[in-house]
Amino acid sequence: MIYRNLEGDYGTDYLLTHPGRGYVEQIASWDGEFSGTGLPWQELIRIADSPSLADEGVQDAATRFLLLFPLLTDLDVPEAASARLIAALTAIGAPRDTVRLAAEHLLTHLTRRSRHDPAWTSPLSGS
Image 1 (cartoon, one colour):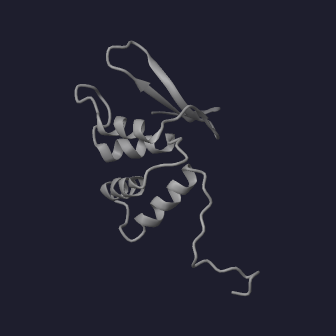
Image 2 (tube, helix red, strand yellow):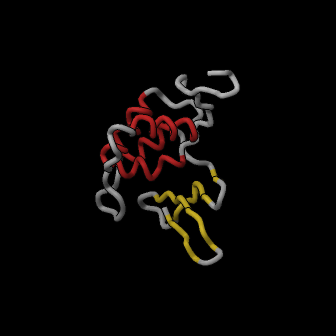
């Protein structure tokens, strides 16, 4: 990930490197809006769980997972996604009493689903 914070050039670039290649592949960028191909769930997990110990960069699987998570492009993630996200957030110090709700919000947003909490009430319905 490259964070650009130059005057007039703000954003995040997501680059993929391959061992043995002399170039990088840009898989996405964020310049106010997401653009690029992103990653399907299985590829995100594969990259997060297989750091190259010989190379520079983040080695911790939970941190790698969270850095890659904004690239998720699968609209239908496996049920294990929530548990994996909760574990990663907890590993980096997210409060245990709110981590489940935070994970639900993040997954809902990235998979572009609507979220409804049955405990919500509406002043329009009289409840």
